[in-house]
Image (cartoon, rainbow, N blue to C red):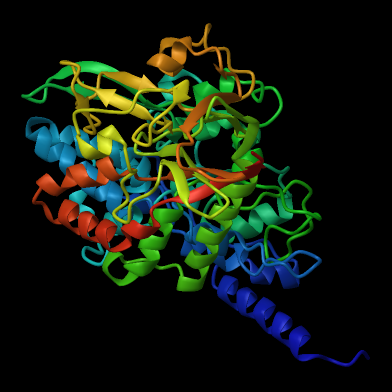
Length: 562
């Protein structure tokens, strides 16, 4: 007999612990004794009055979908990865809570409709349960997360959870009906017959195990691998509201799916291929009787919001965060690594001294499958460029980040009614190339109110490769001066800097980087005027972390002799 080891003993103890947990579900006798598993009688089809008939919270799934490691020993547990993501914390997100409150204050006559719509993708299980029983869904009745603990509130707190995504059917995916949270979950199916979809062929034996343990029926669903699945919540059209809450327009607030469709990536790569990286080598996806699966994907849901991940960690007690601090640290680290490695490239082309001026061409390449940045319009990226002479004296600077989160020289950070244009050439320090979307209301005034916006005053976010701006539809069109800039094209933008060298001595060092903020200064600062608990709390959080709002995506340096 082989000698035992502490590691082996721990693994066996963990396995037996899971068996004991699942024994109470009635399948252990089947597994060990060859008997048919005991099942509860199927409930009759009805309109459920609470979420227990529709969903299970994530801890029910973690018993079997944690404790997963690759052959090399890397922990790839599904539950561990998920619970530190923005998906798991969608209802806890303090910026989302503040933004919803702002919209209900701006449009009190439509407050109930706003809560119903905004809960659709941030509190989707409680939303679906309320909708299935004929009630409008709520947001603030379930907050704070540390407060109400009724059944529906627990579903709300669990965010974009396992049995939400894995119950979405393929019905209408990719069509306009599926956008803005138009995913379809068949709420008419009785409890004991409810399918949960996975990307792999179903093992009949394990299907019985899962059904006995959870009440759900395993089913294969190829649609879980498709971008159309993600588009249900990551394509968002908002209803613009007038002063009395009346609908005055429809606005394409977030359309990364359509941007991807208009790029070269649509036939080649899905959303999941970048945001849920594949696990290699083949690895089990269940810790009880799981066998290695080719093509299993990490549930890290890589995005760009390192800032709110850190905010969730820092204020975890107030926000009711369940993921351990170390897991959130790791989620923020992986997010930043993804941004640095897979998002953009910056290069310095021509750099020459002509007639006492330095002329530098800077190019930004988008490596993503959608615009850069994309989705929620608070996000922005910009070029910071500095020139120093051989003595180290600063000759020129554009795009410096102030400690409070504002960009030096940015018109919009200085004045909420103004904004920086798209530049082909920059000659002054108060000019900054910012890749962003600027929203405007029915009167043409700049706004950060999502439900006031009816059009884009500016959209020069860097296009993905293969994106033809001449044929792009109105929902993904380029707006402003970038539309007519021949150097703003599929996959990249080029901007020229012309620097006066009066007083500069010797060789010149040019440094440039592309910086990125998930929440731009103006979007946070405009919440100061609102005296609600959620807005005041978020502004205080932002102020305490404002020196760390941005991260570099790419850098380049060159020395220019004289």
